[in-house]
Picture 1 (cartoon, rainbow, N blue to C red):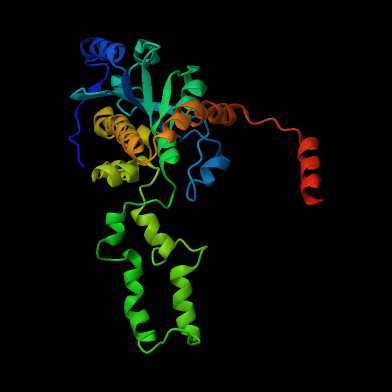
Picture 2: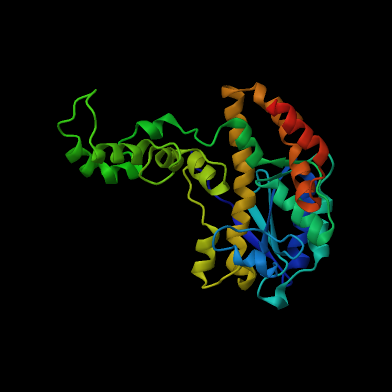
Length: 320
C-alpha cells in the first residue's frame, strides 16, 4: 500500500500573516491532526554529548525546538513552522506555535508517533502541556511484537544477511547427515545463525529484524506503505550539517512535514488492521496503554520516586 505525500508549506517570518491563520483554522476544524517537532541537542550537558556516538540521549532541560509540523487529516497540504533554524531572520516566535496548539478543540486529537518525546520537550522548553494525544508508536506496540513480520516477506526468495554465509555453509555441510555429530566448523556456522543472543545481519534474529513491521516511524511506514521516508541522517548529510539547527527552514520543511503526515496515516492503518486481527486490543490501547504516554513523560521530566525499603522487602520475600 502506498500513499502520495501532501505538498509542504513552510511557514516563517516571510509568509506568516498569509498562512498561519489558515493553518490555525484547519486545526480548529480537524478531528485528527498529525504533529511532530524537530529538535537540536547541541546545548546538552558535555557528559551527555560524549555518549552521542553510541546512543542519542536528549538533555530535555537544554533542548532547542527548531521547528514543528502539522498535517490535518485529509488535507492536501502539510505545514512546517520555522522556530529556531539557521536562517535566523525567518524564525517565528513561540506565540505562533502556541496559536496552533491552542486551536485544537477538546474533542479533537493530536496524533504523534513518539508522544512522550513531544510531551516532554514542549513542557520542558515552553511549559506547554498537550492534551488529547494519540501515540502511533504505542499503538504499534499494542498491535504487534518486535519480531512480528508479514508472512509474504518471509516467504519471498532470499534470506537476508544469512545468504552471505551460504557458500561456506554449503561447503561445510555438503555431506552432513541428520543426527551425526557436527564438526567444530559446522557448530560455529550453526551458532552464527541460530544463537539467541545474536542480532547480527547474518543471524536468524537479524533476518527477522530486517523484515519486522518495526516500531520506529521510518521502518513502520516502509513495512505498511512500502514508502521509504528520508532519514534524519540523510537530511543532515544532504546539506553538510551536523545538527538540525544548522539547517534552514527550507532545507528541513519537507522532512519535518512528512513525519506529521505519516504518523497519522500509520495510526489509521494500524487501527484498521487491529479491527480485523485483534479488535479487543483497541480498547486496551485507548483505556490503558495510550494514557501511559503521559506517565512516561512525567517520569522523564521529574524522575520516579520509589520506596527503597519496600523494594528490598519485596526482594527478600521473593528470595525466600
